[in-house]
Image (cartoon, rainbow, N blue to C red; front, side):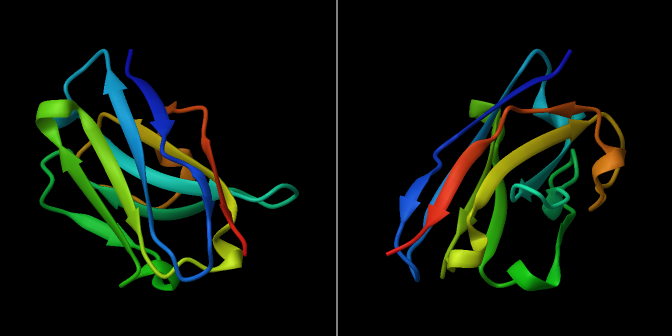
Length: 124
């Protein structure tokens, strides 16, 4: 069973950058598509970006295009979400999720495995 652990969250000032990580164990990342999501209390979880298991397909929601970048280090079995130009409205718990299917999708129900989340707070 794929296990995912997020890390790298924290407090950052508006306009700053942060990279959150998703470490995978149990299976090779080359078998799993990975998605990044976030959730604010009282709201539904929002998809942000995804990468196919081959690494050659990525998708982003419009609001993070050009600001967020998903990438993968297969040697470290880790997927990253690099975030630039952070805004207070980016404050949320950030989750990664995995599924053993081709391609990648930007909706929650497509994913089988989830991490526990890491808090990102954007505030001065």
